[in-house]
Image 1 (cartoon, rainbow, N blue to C red):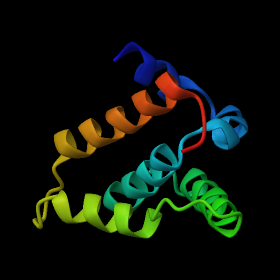
Image 2 (cartoon, helix red, strand yellow; image 1 turned 90 degrees about the vertical axis):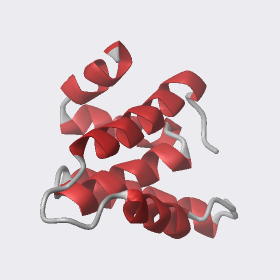
Image 3 (cartoon, one colour; image 1 turned 45 degrees about the horizontal axis):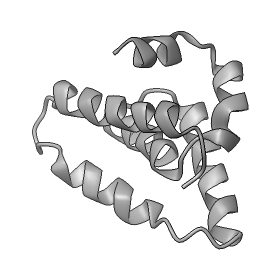
Length: 103
């Protein structure tokens, strides 16, 4: 939880510097957060750009499928499941902080 708190406290420009070292799964998780909650649009766009670059370079991570699967896990209601979204975001951020390398 502390690592996620630290990541959330970093300003957007500092987060953008971390993008090249983030796992593809963590990048895609930020897109899910944006699509589900409308949060951090600019950062999500940068994450998508990095995912596209990686795909062009041969990365086999299917980020579109991952994003769709994660969005489909969320309940279809008027109020989003913030706990589920937070949990998914925490897991992806922890993955980034543990591995610190592209996948």
